Amino acid sequence: MSNSGKALVWLGAGAGLCLVAGLALGLSVPPDARQGDAVRIMFVHVPAAWTAMMAYGLIALCAVVTLVWRHPLADAAAKAAAPLGAVFTALGLVTGSIWGKPMWGAWWVWDARLTSFLLLFLIYLGLIALRHSLDGEARAARASAILALIGAADLPVVEFSVKWWSTLHQGSSLIRAGGPAMAPVYLWPLLSMALGYTLFFLWLWVWRIRIDLLVRSVRRGP
Image (tube, rainbow, N blue to C red; front, side, top):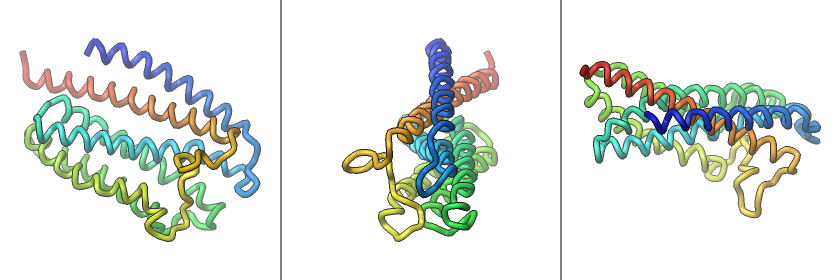
C-alpha cells in the first residue's frame, strides 16, 4: 500500500502531462489529405483501443496467477481492471463509429476488426456480471479467471483480423515492419496520447486495487 501510494503520484502526473501535450499537439495538426479534420479522432480512438486490449492482457495474466498460485492480489487486480477495460473498449467503439462515418459512410459495419472488438466489450461485461453473480471471493475469483482465459482467445483475433480477412479497417500504421507509416506531425501526438492513456489506466487501476484490498480487509475483520 505504501509503494502503490507513491506510484499514484507519478502515474497521475505523467498521465496528465502526456494527455495535455497530446491533445495540444493533436488539435494543432494540419488536416489530412484524405481524411481532413476527421484524422484528429485517431488521437482518441487508437489509444483507447490499445488500452482496452492491454487491460485485457493484464486481466488474463492475473487470471493465470490466480489459478496457479491463488494469490489474492492477482484476483483483486483482475477485478479492478475489468470495469476500466470495459470503459476504454466502449470509448474505442464510439470513437471508431464517429471516425467510420465520414470514412466509410456508415456508423457501423460488421467488419472483422469491429466485430471482434465488440466481442471484447461483451466479454468484459460478462466478466463483470459473473463476478457479481457469485457468492464467495474464492469461487468468484476462480470462475472469473477461467472466463478471462477463455476470452483471451479474442485478443489475437482483434489484432490480426485485418491480416486474416479482407476488411474495411486499415492495418497498423504504427507498429509495422519498416517503421511507422505516418508523418511525424501525426506520430508524436499519437504516441503522447497512447502513453497518456496507458498511465491514466494504470493510475485508475492502482486506485481500484487499493480500494478493493481495503474492502476485503474490512470484510475479514481484525
